[in-house]
Amino acid sequence: MYRRCLAEFVGTFGIVFAPVALSATGHFSGGESSLIAAAWVSGLAVLAMVYALGHISAAHFNPAVTLGFAVAGRFPWRYVIPYWIAELSGGIVAAALAALLFGAGHGAQLPAPGPLSRALGVEAVLTFFLMLVIISVATDRRVNGAIPGLAIGLTVVFDVLIGGPVTGGSMNPARSLGPALFAGGAALSAYWLYVVGPALGAVAAAWLYEALRGGEQHAQGAPNDLAVALYEIEKEAHALR
Image (cartoon, rainbow, N blue to C red):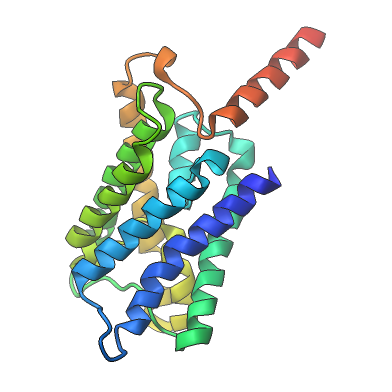
């Protein structure tokens, strides 16, 4: 399990450091800080980390995704807290390194002026799209194993393009926490939006896909080998009774 948690830490570090560093380097001569660049850097970072580490930990890299998998019964509840700790720690360390290299305050996300309900709804809807794709490609046996990284990465791209002007397009409490801690002030005060919105969207998408899946014969855990191992342990324990 420690290897899975380490993979979650490293993967989350990667997907947080990339957009935060881009935000910082955009201030340099020749740097790029446009919304399109932010969307593609975020999506490509997710794509790379999914292909690099998905076979170890199922590449959650997001506390809201871990929650969605657990609610859907595709990830054991007993391992939710360890995954959350690894993911949030990865995001914080990524933001700390960016702050050390470029100064604090870069990459922090804030909702645009307007009703907070709009920002909350945008984060929920964006995360709904992301979780729907993730739970499909990660827990359905009918999906080709080469697809997940590309599908998830491209979903992040279009989500950030849509939500960037409104909320920054987080979809991930671990993405928002580290930069908010180092920026402080308004970013930290608004952090709750980037927890509640993604959690609502992820749970709704997980429930919907379970209704759409079409049978348990198509399902697997995320990661599947962990779910299988736990099932075997519980079956043996029941037989011993």
